[in-house]
Length: 50
Image (cartoon, rainbow, N blue to C red):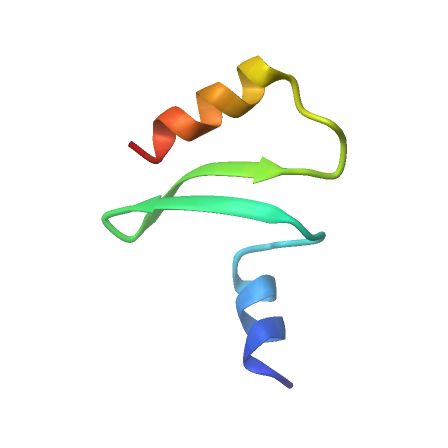
């Protein structure tokens, strides 16, 4: 099994694109882009990366 598949399974990524944010080794945010996001949802997610 490829490394990419292993990582996707480890973090329960079901679709692409999925954006994950980690802080101190822990997941602190996840944005699944299956459906169109509002600007507010995107801005809220981006604040997690700062």
